[in-house]
Amino acid sequence: MSKKTKLFQKIFSIFIAVLMLGSLAIPIVLAILDVK
Image (cartoon, rainbow, N blue to C red; front, top):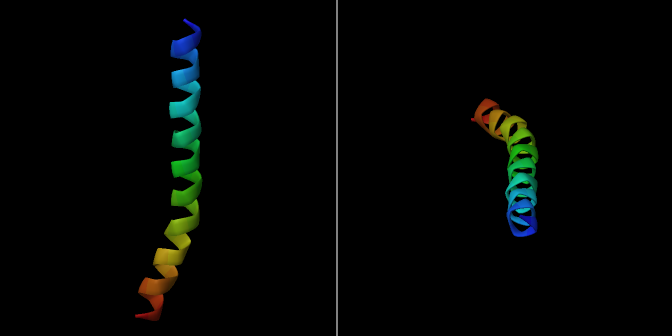
């Protein structure tokens, strides 16, 4: 059970990291598109 919990925490932390990177990347992409 502890192994499953550890795996879930790993997936959850990766998911949060992806969301944070996505929220940072979206305005950058929009800015690049605005420049072009």
